Image (cartoon, rainbow, N blue to C red; front, side, top):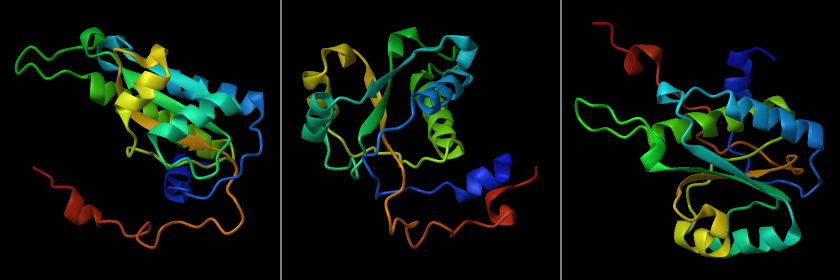
Length: 170
């Protein structure tokens, strides 16, 4: 599938099955995520792969938005490991994390799976459940699985601004 098709066909799937995801698909998803560019290649991120029933129960204490998936990826960043732009002090950790998360999200779709970017979670609760996440700013959570029967894009998914409205040539 070419990139434009992938970008257009990916949607926020909020109805997933808990069917186990094949290890080779998980490996390719993670390879795509770590191929993401980061400022000065400092790679200030961590990805947690959550698959056990015990760990999924902990995730569910922090969010109601796992949509039936049997696994979740969490992306976090370390602010003190990221590039800081010297002109204005902008810390690139969140930007780097978002780029990694986007690679991960698109790779999920490329593997024939579905997900949605979940921002509605209690980061403090997640960190209290998983000591490994302490000290990280948690960017996103991705429930991953096969789309369940009846899963469809949200009604506004296909509404996009015109290029002429979104892009200005100067």
